[in-house]
Image (cartoon, helix red, strand yellow):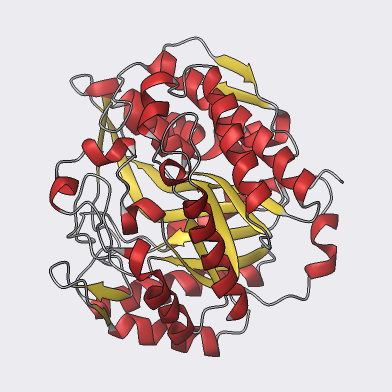
Length: 424
């Protein structure tokens, strides 16, 4: 196949296809799993192990997609359900996810499948965390099993937000595997990128016309105080590492790690050209301050500078930042898809304003010539938010976590309106 970073031939037969209007979810955040490392990590899940009970109510929830009028749906497969023990495969779990795909196809909705969305089987985290080289082989065995069993999928996301996974799990140690070791974190990131390369090859061998990507969390990063040279330096370093280093790795096959007062690292990773589109997750702007008293000398804050407000999680609403990160990502010369964009709020009107302002930015970017092929709102229904519990209300449909009843918000009706009336 042609190098997609040089040629757009992989998409030449689909240039007239409609814009992908969708919503995004993650399996664990909707359904939990008794075999996942996260289940025992957050005590909130002890009281609500099945979260929204989506694993049993999936048919009801998939009907909501038809009500919205979306033509695409991004969801993940829960690895720990597929492989609950190292040498054990649950075929019924595989059939469950295959049935979801069949329902989507029946309803004319394009599935986008995420293979890894933060969670792991508990046995994997204990024996083969990502800084161990054997992790790559174990993950690819899972990918082979899934790809061989699940058909009729064109769009694949290998990893959701690998940098968030590494920063939280290895730099801060606040998520599994809970290791505060930057050197091991860099090794883990390199192994994840090697796993992406292997998964890309496995998927394309099974389906030559598949479109494979990662979903990369990108943020608008700015200095806390523009006049402070240390804050400016920190924001530049963070911007390169968090937003740009993955882009460069796909362009060059080398992962460059540059931290202040540290020797630059350049690690070969076999991912050059192994990208058919690029998934961008965008939520907020973060202001950064150099503070030697903080971990890694970094202090971060959200400020309502533009007057758009803060989300219920305290994140700044900054629509203009979406244009910045899409412009960064355009360097890859592959189609772009916004694979996540959403707001945690109980205020439906605030959710509507957030959605409108960000989609307005997408329209402007397309008019400027950016090759943007889709938008996925996060999320379909309220769910479990990592380390935040059940009160971060991202859903277009509200969930009563006592009765598990789903209720449409005004934002759901507005999204349907946008889908019908925006012509990208």
